Image 1 (cartoon, protein in one colour):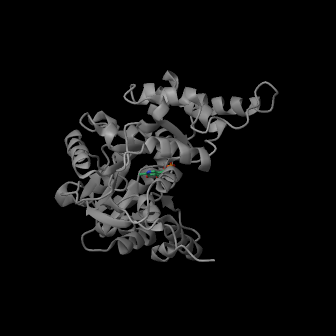
Image 2: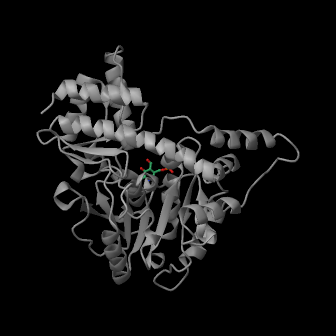
Length: 391
Ligand code: PLP
């Protein structure tokens, strides 16, 4: 059996497995440590009753002759696609162009079957590891576009690439692309005949008015962009699993074939749809009351972000992000990322994420996630103040 040769270019573990190994080792040596996790970026707060209840009722009904459902529509429940199109996209896109997924991570992986191996893929550096690693697995060539404080975390230039993966608001820096930046990017993608893959996993955290929540707010983007969405951070569905992929019908390959047709074909073969219980939860999220309830959760995490932002800024560190996303990107100028990570773990029992794990331009940074119970976040802020002092 021949191995996929590209796997030899991957590190042994996914980033967060490496971090957990270090943390487990630390906890074994320090069993009394009260670890606070500002690392992985997983939601912590219970789902609103209205949403959990909708899934509970759906699950109960599955145990009755009238309520039982088997396979659903592979593209996802029509009602849910309509709700996404109207409530989140204000009918900028058609519900036919929405494919419900079990989350954006696996959707990124599924997209890969559309493309021939050996393409050039441009990614922000640092970036969410999945587009990078799934591109490596499929034999594509990567171009890293540094995003640093010097260029306001937006690539200075975009060289010719077949695919450009952009995440806004951006994991890990917590910064976000402006309308002007995205307009230029869409124009460039048209000129250079690149396909954009736009990841909006954190769109619901956007506070500023000139930050688009969707690439389709930019005119002409439906000719060049696929968009990924997720209920994970928007509604606390990291464990429930639900997302969506938008593939506009206007997208074509260089030979004129329809990208939508191929995606629909691939999706029908490779995926049998998200869980119908998750879809019931997703529908509840998008009701008027559901949106109000999820907003309270988003506000809660952004209040956490402000607590950490203030504490870290007071210590004299340069702190970025945190306005349109619940992540803070903090510079440790005298250290590399892993030594800053180790110092915080050993001295304050705080777990963060080393910036270099997201790409070479992340060296010297740590990502702080603001997901957590507020009491723990306040405790983390206090430990930071005690450790670094106020400057
Ligand atoms: N995209 C980005 C930028 C993320 O940070 C994450 C999760 O952390 C995902 C996608 C994956 O989301 P999902 O839980 O929908 O698979």
